[in-house]
Image (cartoon, rainbow, N blue to C red):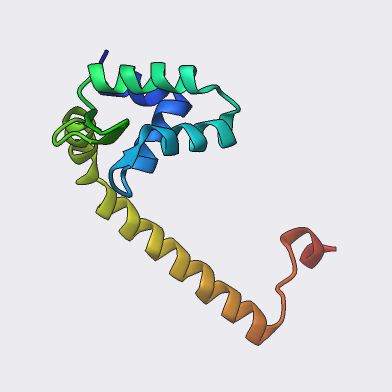
Length: 124
């Protein structure tokens, strides 16, 4: 399963988000998934297995616990896709900033000179 299919599931996506904060035991991840989605520990184990098989997470047994962490490069496919389009964002953000400035200027002009009548009101 590719990284996009893995992240399409909200439970798996939330587990990845939780692991972005650092390695966590399976029990803690299960508690997050249960609290937010109401799923059982076996269902969480299935989701973690899917993440592991897709190479998104690594697991390390430590005594009786299994510690999960994000795998280096596990989301490389997603990162590459985002970077492909990220180059377009500054241009669009610059255009948005220009429009926001125009709106602020118009609001200041309206506040300073009162509101302008609409075309229908002016011709009445």
